[in-house]
Image 1 (tube, each protein chain N blue to C red):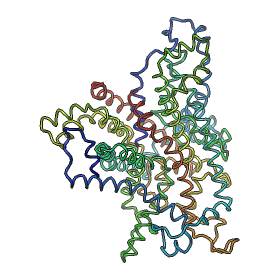
Image 2 (cartoon, chains in turn brown, orange):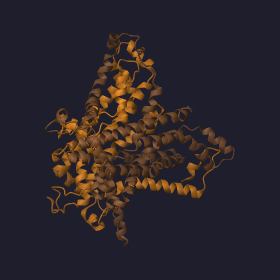
Image 3 (tube, each protein chain N blue to C red):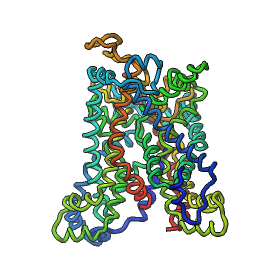
Image 4 (cartoon, rainbow over the protein chains, first blue to last red):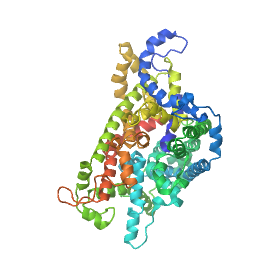
Length: 332
Length: 303
């Protein structure tokens, strides 16, 4: 999740930094032809990017009209398929598998909000308290590493550790206990998924918090220490208030991203634990749309998710902006 | 936690209690172990001889002889070696395309007030808030005839809005007097980008390149969607099929190989595939890692 949330905090905060650089006259002052003559190299530079964005973002985004069609790629295509209005959506809301996907997605988001979200904060505080710079850099290097592994790799590694033939079960068996296969146990699937997420991304997630910690004025600590505040009081009264704006921002952005719990992680483990616990929004779109060939139906599910996600993100951004303006910028 | 570190404290800072420091050290050691131990035992198992693996009956924790049989077996088998080639090629070509397109695009977007600046920026920023959906994207890729083509692994994911925005933020922080003076000297935009902007942004470009490369090397989902032909499988699909799902490798049959040795155990072969998948990240990582905190992320956050 960290990459996703970082992302948005970046876009939001880039805007205030915009300054007119280069030969930037205000629009309207220079005639169009003169601006074109001046700026055409920039347009040429942007062209490949815009072409790719058009092909793989704009056209698919507009292609969502098939959600309102009884789409058949062979007989009609996007122009010839009959328009059926909201039939796909009506069917969707009556589909028990879809409702299960919604419930699972929201359940996993809520669970990880409690059991994943605080982990990077705690880890950042722990790292920040390591005095030796070299040791700290080493530990940071180690904990960032799993972020660069693919989900296939993470699942494979967890399988070798916690699976029925994995390291833990093997050690337990050697000592006369019976091993447990965590990888195929659907009751503990949510724990497994969260553990995998922590292992992969908790270290990387500390970056934002470490950056925020580095901006806290060290004089505050000294003044507090002189006034007799011990370690824990300093953390409570200086460190945590210093982190609060970032925590609030990331929390709100995570809520705005509530429908995204990842895709590969669940696809990969679906056959091991069954769809009852592993069906989430994105896997539902895949199975209902691509696997069964009911493209219109799958597109409807995808469009529903996209639109709800859009609304959530815009609302979250508004809230974050309101809070962020006061919190993040007041110090600098 | 040694004495030396205590001396690194500020004068007003009281040293923590001994128990507290031991506890903290213990937790940190556990965290480091949780990341490194799985990697250690996986690599070790892939390098262990058959007798050791069979005696332990699973992953090897204590080294007892080293052999490259598993790797020899894998690379004599066309499935894995072909997949390594495919993944390497896709990663190299994809990263080059992505980095080129993103650097050009980010530079083009780095100057507010230029022609079409706002609509173009809007175009990119919109990618953050809305995902067009799996099905329409799939239909678009297939209608371009990219099914079973390596381009399906590159083009749909070639532009990351996040990376473009990070690059753009860096380019915008370059003092524009520098660019202006070059312009007065008659340099064109391409020359300015190549001679002035890029040399000043080496760190961020390296990190963004790493992000793209890691993305391509790790990509599993696009390959699963678009590549049906097993001969075109990248490593991620091979990893899924033979390691996660435990399908038998076609030629890695048990028995005797050409040297009269017993063939390496399946587990060692699987762990060798995992090791190969991990390797590139481990190799490049140390060179780029030092830029993470100082370079990209903090810069991006502070805008």
